[in-house]
Amino acid sequence: MIFTKKEIKHLIISILLVALAFGFDDKQPSFVLSHWLYNYIRIALIVTSSFLVYQLAQKIVANYYRAKTEYHMWNIKRYWFHPSCVLPFRGTYIPAHGTWIQKSIFNIKSIFIGPILLLIVSFFSLGKLFFIAIGCTNVIERLHLRAEKRWMRLQGYERAQIAVAGPFATLLLALLLKSINPNLTDAIFINQMFSIFNMIPLGKLDGAKILLGSIPFYFFSLVLIILTILLMFFLSSMQSLIIALIFALVILVYVLIKLGT
Image (cartoon, rainbow, N blue to C red):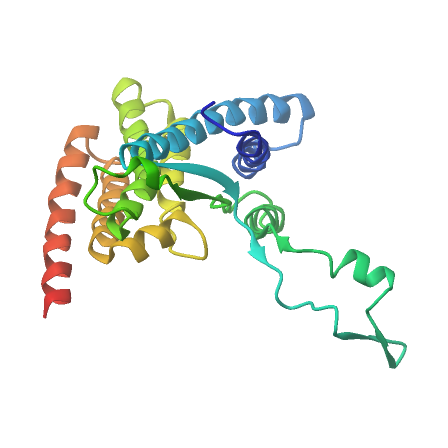
């Protein structure tokens, strides 16, 4: 089975939320439910294909390095509440032990910060802005299959290549769609955003894994993705990719020289 049951659940929720972020504002002067639902379903289908391409690319690269990946929504551990703390109540403090507070708040082990940020940005901007970096990928080593590799444990650059496979795949999909039909603006734009947002080096996001795995490779990938997307507004897909690749290689050499000095 390519995706586990847990992954499928997280992917479905992520697809629905990201589609909401992109489809929240249907660009119509007045709200018509039927039109909004049609637009939302259309966007959801595009988002589904982007998610699948993104995740499958990471799984293919991970399999090459004798590892596997597991997608889940971006969450953070609960650090700021502890059962030993006390809460203010009518000017006094009451212990949290044995109360409904403990059963509700203090039993929370983690918070899905990714979906929360997506909803906050979408609703407060009325769909004008969006945040779609709501998921991340765990890389799971399969040591019993790495006997022929030089190192038994996954190296930083290997983890970086697994993580960046997703953003590269959606970028290539955007380039391919533009080559086939430049009028597929929504599909092209959504895949471009998948590439950019997942390069954010924050928390457990894939961008952080790439940066921690290899600093030069991160800047190479970031410049390649951003510059390719910018050039796609003016040039063909192939021209955009070639020019961006040249500049990204220059940046890579520069960073390597700086880190070597």
